[in-house]
Image (cartoon, rainbow over all chains, first blue to last red; front, side, top):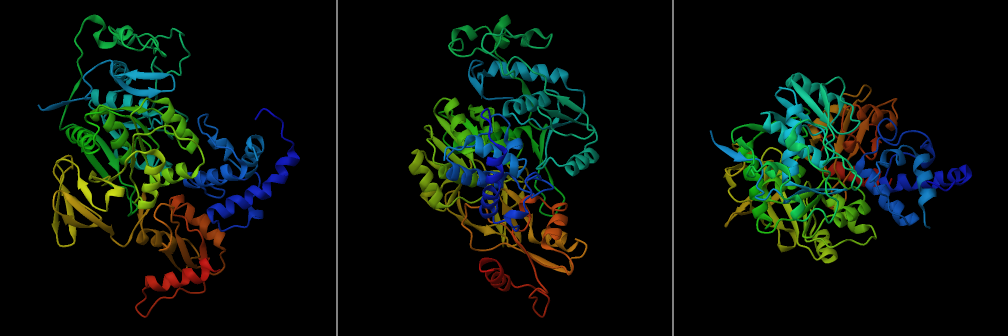
Length: 94
Length: 485
């Protein structure tokens, strides 16, 4: 979180993460249809905690870091595609 | 009046729970419960929404001390709260976070010296006038063992260690099934049965002679977590980790934070994610799984990775847990001590031991000698995804009630593995609507976990001459439209 990630870096990551979510969850939407700032849970895509764990697994394999929820960041990290991409950009080791 | 002790630990200095700032002793737990009991209003029902397992435990005990009943719904939706409010008008919520509880009466968990995320040596005193709980801050490390604690808690004023007694016929908790017919059913649990339940599980898992530190990935309010983390600590003499780790790395950290022997209480889904993550696991001594069938493959993998026996629990919210098995030892289950199964025709009834009354089971069961039995699957219509239950009939009813839907049917594919989460598919006839629109409307009616993935729009469903949808035809449709579409 501390190091500055450029908005361009995050913007470039969005389609990749959207694709990852759609394929990991077998969702019935095109990756391009996921709006960057719309909610992933509830009224947005309607994801649940099972989905979060599945996405977390794919993220850890693809980007080389483990998600943690000890600081209740969970809700913020998974609040939108952009939030998730921002977190990945700041934590990724590959 | 017959009574049973609040907990089974014989030593006030024994550890009852582990929090990030260290162990909580039995004496501290009893003091916290006594303190909270004084703050609870004189009312009948406690809706204990605490996320923290220790705070839940304090709330539960405080409620018992006040003669209250703990309400444990399967969801925390606004609709659930409204229904509870109607059926149990004089309830009060106990919260330890920002839970939205509408306009229900609410008590936020008061911080005590035990529950504060204390920094070492801060010299915090409890926020109450009651001398018995005016304890020193939780010792952080070397202070804890054993002599400095002597003289703390109830023994401080020279009183002998006494554990409160609760009437065995007191209605201690009402658990709610997740409602396969839409209306959640209240399952009433008396204190005596809960005590028996904790003891029986401890014996079945072999913990009665050797208490373990329990790390649970499941919520403490639902039956499996309630029994296998809270009751197992309370009446199996164990201690539990107060958190509910979620991601694989969280689970590893929680295990690291408690001493061996360690018991991990989890589900096939969490376990599968844990083993798939390429992280180092601290030593674990026993693994426990429930809520969905565990495959032999995953059980073997878990045992190979950890060296710990992988046990499974079978039960339901209605009956409580009934049996256990070591998955790699074979398919047969062994009943928990005291529990009995009776069969008439197709129906199997659980009774005796800690089972409340006579409970008809929704599984097809083959009885074997020596308290053992085989499970032959659920009765056809029932769906269980990640521990949440519903029926195809209920889902189809909700689908049919969506404006614009002419016909529709949910379908659970055969092919997915037992540990992965099998998602439902829905075939829908809805001229003029998009799949997205139907999904959005369904989301207001059913739990997100049952939403179809995918929802397939069709011109008509392959109904036969009697209007039925043979499962084989739906499977063929699934193969054509989903697997290759």
